[in-house]
Amino acid sequence: MNFVIVGAGYTGLSVIKKLSNDYTTYITRSFKGFKCASKIIDLDDNINSIDLQGPYNLLYTVPPNPNLEIDNRLPSLLNNISTLPNRFVYISTSGVYGNHYGRLVNELTSPKPQTTRAKKRVVAEQYLNDWCYKKNIELIVLRVSGIYGPQRLGLERINKNLTIINENEAMISNRIHIDDLTTSCISALKDKKASGIYNISDGDFRSNTWFIKKLCELKGIPSPKEISYEEAIQTWDKKRVSFLKESRRLDNRKLRDDLKIKLLYSNAEKGIKASL
Image (cartoon, rainbow, N blue to C red; front, top):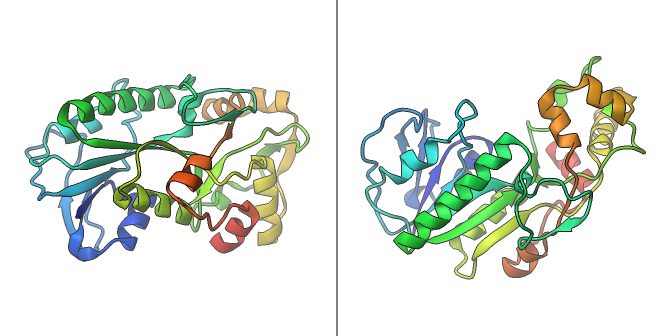
């Protein structure tokens, strides 16, 4: 089986590094220097037919275009691939669930997106579901929580102007280490038993305030100033405030029981240390 990775950002690159060069092709805007085959394509432009050799399974890691109300990137790919995949793995977001006031949500929980970016993901999931059904293609959807890992800890944002919510007011959070996300992506590509939707989360629900304070402690730098929830609502930018208005716990049992994923970093403190 061949593998096609669409998008060579943080997640795509991590997956590409773990797959065999001989059986992997990646599609990206710019050449990344890997030994495997590559196709340099900008999905925001008018593109011609994308010649792919089957049989293959495809992992799509590209986010919707933030500047458009309706995403053009996914349809652009689907309308131009010369050979259809056997399986399509789509990286979505846990944001599709919306706000559940800290309650546990599983893959059967109906999406109730609140933000524009999450609404675009729901549209993409529905579009893909219809397309794959008509084409008789297996569809796997990975609803991914906040990704962290080496070079993605947010250290560059920790300065004298950054504030965090008082720990006693901070809400629970969901996250996944890039190594565990990579393992999940590869299992979704390869495992014949994989099917449907999977929540991708480490199951460690400690708050973002805890995460930043622990990161600062391990790095040996001062923690940001703590403020009240109400002050954060008034002073943070709109995107950051949007995360404050959603709270849920992602149930990852299907990931562990169905795909047999053994998470390396179910304890986020261990994940931070490894990332540093």
